[in-house]
Image (cartoon, rainbow, N blue to C red; front, side):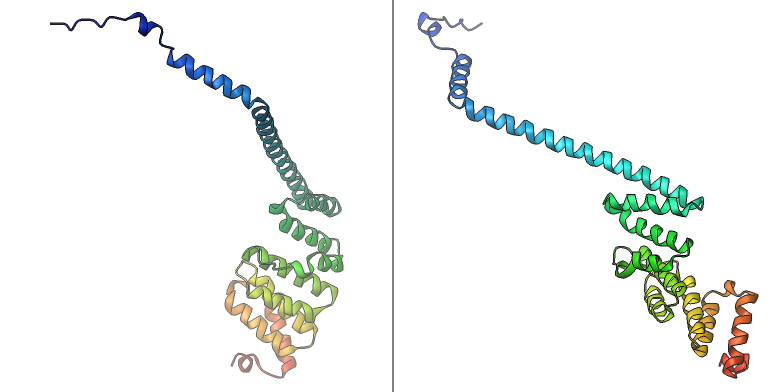
Length: 231
């Protein structure tokens, strides 16, 4: 049997609606704090605009840096070293961290290609092997060592290339050959022979007629036969 429906009394009708009461209270609160709320809202909007604007600007700058890097790389590969040098300088001036080290290396190599080793040495300087990356550290040191060798500073080149050999990377072959050449230039014949032999032991596929003849000539200067030199 269905329960009798509750009668709605006149007293119940006169009760204020809860939703209307809450809405009224909210409006009163807004009126009381309207100035503060408007100020907070403006601040929030301003901060959001600044953040979005900064993100857009940084993205735009990164896109420009990427385009400039590709342009400079193309110029370098085409042998347009003067143009590449200028473009890589502009790229470095943008201050985009991911490109700083690589731009420096290409600037130094452009100077080397233009037969300006002193400028290459100045470009790399004490920044070589700054600890950013094992591979880039070694490339920077070998590049610096080669520039020092070209400049005629073989003592410095040997120290730099020795540091390169302490780094992990694929440039050991170039570093070992550079050290051997510099020892030869400095008249350190036995060190040069030892360097070439260490190179040939580590890189047997690198044994060419030219290097074999170098070793023979150097061994002749030491007064040792090839058999004695290997003992």
